[in-house]
Structure formats: C-alpha cells, structure tokens
Image 1 (tube, rainbow, N blue to C red):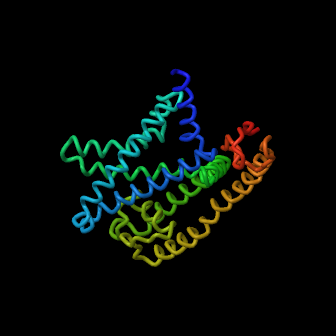
Image 2 (cartoon, rainbow, N blue to C red; image 1 turned 60 degrees about the vertical axis):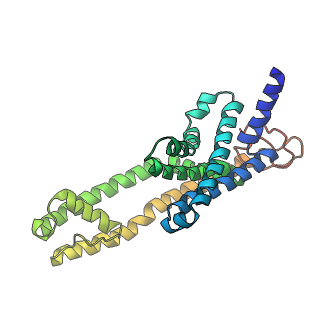
Image 3 (cartoon, rainbow, N blue to C red; image 1 turned 180 degrees about the vertical axis):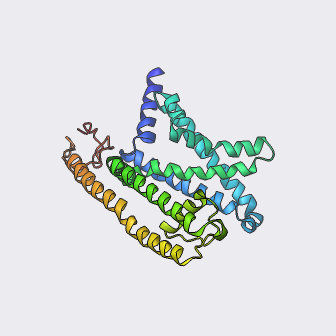
Amino acid sequence: MHDRIATLRRHLYEVIFQSSTPAGRRFDIGLLCCILASSTVVIMDSIQEFNLSHGRLLSLAEWFFTAIFTLEYGLRIFAIHRPFKYIFSFYGIIDLMAIVPSYLGLILPGTHSLQIIRILRVLRIFRILKLVQFINQSNLLLNALLASRLKIAVFLFTLSTLLVVFGSAMYLIEGPENGFTNIPVSIYWAVVTLTTVGFGDITPKTDLGRAVSALVMIIGYAIIAVPTGIFAAEMNQELKRQDSRDANRVCAGCGKCGHPGEANFCLICGQPLEPPT
C-alpha cells in the first residue's frame, strides 16, 4: 500500500511539477486554458450589464473553476516531498489566493469585493508558460538586469541629481507665485517634464523658465537611450552565454541537443537530462 502511494505521488509530481515531460506539458496546457477562462469570468463579472444578464452562468463557471483549482492545489501538496516549501512559496501563495476569495464570499457576507483577488490566477501563467520557454526568457531578462545593475544605479543617481538641480533652478526662477511653491513640488515638475509626460498642472510663466523647460524636455529624450543601450548590451552577452550552455545539453537517449536550462527531461523522448553545467 505504501509503495503504491509513493508511486502515485511520484507520478503526480512528474505530471504537475515537471513541465518538460509530455504528460506535464499536457497538464500545463489544460491548466493554462482554465486559468485564462477563469480570469475571463472574473473580468466579465465586473461588467454590471453582463453580470445582470448572465449572473447565474458566471457564478456556475466560477465555482467550476474554483473546484478545479482547489483539487489542483490539494494534489500539489500531496505530490511534493516538502509541502510547506510549496505552500509558503510565491506561487503557492498565489495558488491559495486564487481559491480563498470564493469560499470567503460563500461564508462571510460583504466579502464579494475580495473576489477580484482571483485575477491573481493570471500570475500563474508565468509558471505554466515554461512549456513555451517563457520563463527561460524571463530569466534571461533578469540576468541581464542583474549584470547591468551597477551601471543602471550610476545612471539613476545621475538622473536624480539632474532632477534636483533642475527642480531647484525652476524654484528660483519661477517662485511660489507661478505654482513652484517649494523645491519638492519643483522636482515633481522636473520628473514630469524630463519624462516628457507633461501633465500641465504646473507650467513655467517666465521666458527663462520656458527655456529651461525646453532644455529639460530635450535632455529627457536623450536620456531614454542610455539605459536602453546598457540593457541591450547585457542582453546580447547573456544570450551568447545561454546559447553556449544550451548547446552543451545533449540527450543520451536520442541525441537531441539545445535543451533549455530549466528542462529536466528530453523534449523529444522524455529521458532524464544531466543537470546544466
């Protein structure tokens, strides 16, 4: 009996948690469809006219998806070897928050507004989309950001200095009588102008102030290219490193190469892969 339970848990773990296996991919595709459909139900439920005409159908659909996600949450806890690690992980909390509001709305009156939290199910797509290597690309972006963090920090420090300088200058040039009541308000104007948003709630009235405003806007356009260039260079380097790592992951069974770093099984034959080096 114990062996059968252990075998069942191992099989469920491969299906639910190993998205690189054929069964795992099928499970993730089905779960992805449920996530998208249930999120659509939440969105449509927020439209008053649609809710009045199709309220019962939306309620039935919501409870149908709640039952599916409750079963999935329970199976994840049953299948994993360290349940508490999953329960208190980021996605474990998201999974729980995706089902709790429905039950709270049933038990406690006045908690219907909490049901909008169910839209957090959409966040789970980032885990499910491993089967199209979306997470792999997200990791690539994260690694590029981490590699360029010092350069970006220097850029942000320089940008902050410019904002303080321009804000202080406009406070001296325009003064409280023209809406620049203090330096923080003037810095707010500098942020809005430098980013070329231009809310228009505070505008310079003097010729010198307008000249400084034009200079700030021109600098704003030039500044956009700086972090873009830094990030693009790091992305290029990270792509080269990733391609080199993936090329070395070869399946011993069928000879398929180029498996992504997070894959545990061959994408063709399903044989376990060696850990990435």
